[in-house]
Amino acid sequence: MAGEGDKFEVYQDKRGQWRWRRFSAANGKIVGASCEGYMSKADCEANMNRGSNPKDKWEIYKDKRGQWRWRRMASNGKIVGAASEGYNAKSDAEANAARQGFTPG
Image 1 (cartoon, helix red, strand yellow):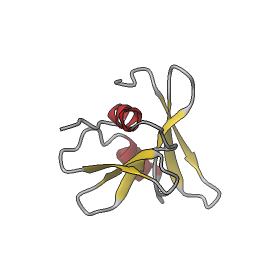
Image 2: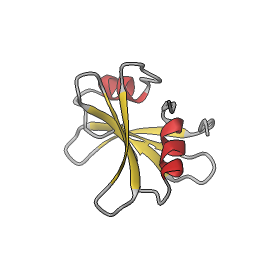
Image 3: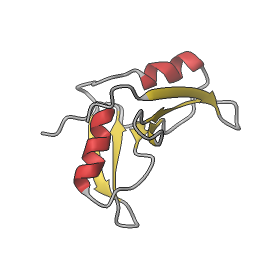
Image 4: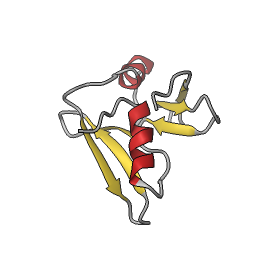
């Protein structure tokens, strides 16, 4: 699932920091989001557009409610993206992560 046609939104949160979220072209649901706010819009957009960075580490895990999620960490250990919802099947979490640049293996 490549997520072609997905839409991104860059916005300011209640604290005035910049964040991004990605919406599915198929159903309009949020399928990814930044995990932190950025002081500059440019930094937020750079994080949003980081693409498939080979130095990033991906984690597919079960949350406290027993649902599958993903998170993406930069080489410095900082979380730079995460699933916006939990999934009952691990394969669904992996498919959602693939929209963000994850490749299993």
